[in-house]
Each structure stands twice: as C-alpha cells, then as structure tokens.
Length: 452
Image (cartoon, rainbow, N blue to C red):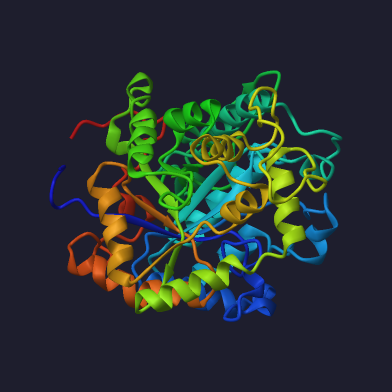
C-alpha cells in the first residue's frame, strides 16, 4: 500500500490548556493551575519537540462559554492569546512548528497577515494558521454583532480573507530589501507591491509593513468538515484536521478513507496535486502500560465530566436545550442539519452516531465527551498504523486526555514504537514547518521567474 518510506506527520494539539477534554482540568494528573504559567507551556512544547512532533497546535476561541451556568462553574474558560503564547514558545524551541487557530470572522486580514508574518520571521519559518470561521453567538457578541454570520457567508468571507493575507505576504519580493548603506537605499521600490484588493467584503490597499515570511506563506490549516469547509480546504489549505476522535466513537477506518478521498478528490479542480495537502485525523490515545491500566485510565476520563455539564454540552452541540428530557431514554427528536448555524460537522457526527446505535441521552452525552481510545503503546501504534496504511490519514493530530502527562506518556511510550516500525522519523531533517510537512515554498506572485 503506497510507498514503504512514507512516514506519518504528527501534530500535538492543545484544545483546553489542561487537555482535550472539557473537564481535563479535573484529571488527577493535570496541572489545572498552570494555564497562565509560561513554564507550563514551555514544558509541553519542549516535550513535543523531544518527541519530534512536526507541530504544536493551539486551538483558540474568542469567548467564555456562558450559555449555561455549568460553562462557568464547571468547565475551563481561560485561554491565553495565541500570538503572544506562540512567540514566547518560539524562543525555547528550535524545530517544532507553531500553529494556532485564528478566526476569519472576527479579525481583519491586515492584522493577521502582519502577526503571522512576524511569528514566521521570529521563529525561523515555523508558523502555521488554523483558519476557522468561528461558530457561536457568544463570539459574535464580543464583536459588535448579536448573531453569528450565516454559515455560507462565513466561508465566503474566509476564502477572501485568505486571498487578502496571501496577497499581503507577497507585498515585498524576496530580494526587495537592499540595506545598502553606501548608496542609502533601504529597499528596491520596484519590488514592493500594493495589493489594491476591493470587494464588498474587504478593501485593503497594502503593502504589508513586514517583509515576506521565511516560508513564503505560513502553513495554512483547515478543520471544517462541512461542504463549504471541504471546498475551502481543497482550494487553499495545506493541512486538514479531519474530525476526531477518528477511531473513537465517531468512525471506522472506512469512514476515514471515505473522507480522505472526498477531500483529496477535490484538489485537482484547483490545479493541486494530492501531496500538497496533508490530512490528519484527530486522535486521543489513553495510554496504559498494560491493558488493565489503560482501562482504568479510560474510566477516569469518562467520569471527569459532571452530569449537568455533559448535558449542557450536548444541548450546545444540538443547538437546543435537552435538560428537561428523561436521561435514560433516547432523544425525543431527530436532529436536523438543515438551517443549523453552529458547527455542522459536530452535529453531523452526532446524527451519524444515532443512526448507528440506539443511544439514550445519558449514553450519548458520555460518548461525545469521552472520545479517547485506550490501549497499550503497541495497541495505540497498531491503530495508527492501520489508519495510515489503509489510506485514511497522512498522520494524526494527537489530543491528550490531560496535560502535561498525556503528552509525556505519548512521547516516551508510543513515539519509540512508531519509530521502531519505520512509521515515524527518528529526527527532524529540516528547520521550517513546510520542510517538516514536505511542502514547497510558494513563489511570490510578483516575482519575474528566473530560468537558471
């Protein structure tokens, strides 16, 4: 299957600062109070680099989830700002890519182009951008709106937002800066370009006041699995975080292959080849040195979320309050995607789950919350190998039940197993995130192509 030298790409993901799970902060091994302590993040990102992860990925949101009281009382709602965080982490690492979520709905392209270009320069070419359109009214209310933008409009804006930022990154050609002290010429004016972008959505003249990033463009990541999300990914993304937990309750290898082929099959119409996009399903391994220990660790994770919070989270995903229904009976209605304006991919996974199994409300909220797969290091590696070799993944976005310990375990126990099997690199061969991912550096649109 495929070439035998193919190796996995691995991302280390932080969704909540204490781990993937909404209640990770309660895990007996998590450092709940570390979430605004630089040394906490430093340990995590240095551990990921020791494990040769291609990137550290920090997921971000722009609101406190206060739709339900439990969101404040029982779930973690503190998140450091990503550019400040990644800039500090770039100083204490050398090779690992540094990526974060940045919303195209509640930002302006010039700001984001500038911040990402700066991060790319300061980190020596290691910046990545997870493009999201945001998904809640809570976020909208922090930015002068009562309601969130409609799904299609969000993706239309996102596509243009990416076009503008890429145009701004091309403002300066690679050799535009002269620094010629003798002549007094700082830059070559013929190698600086205004973007002059004007549509009903954006009006951006340019140029950017940061020179072209080391990677040309920071690596573009996308995670939406809706129809609009898959099209945006095929048009411009270089990494897709496919829905996860891939092997947990939400899918089989066959589902993975189907989504993989669906997205890769869209690339040709945008003039792109299949290897210009890496697809990384999300995966939360719960690692035990024995099967018994793995089962015990899974049980801890499954019991972390208080019932009230679990039900409120399910209500959030469904877009309607279900707290009044009997817990030990199935949902009294069938969820509908039509007209839904939050995360369509989350709702689609719930619908798919309910089509396969007749779950009570209690079983459903527990299932959605504990997305982990428990096993020994070799069992975890077996599952990853199965997905990788079957053509369902180019690698994985690894999520952790608790931090920092869940990452420590993965680096100490699973990475050596993957390396032994020849599925994962022994060491970094490049220095930029593009090099780690085997992606080419984009040519500046204004450059006159030199034939050598």
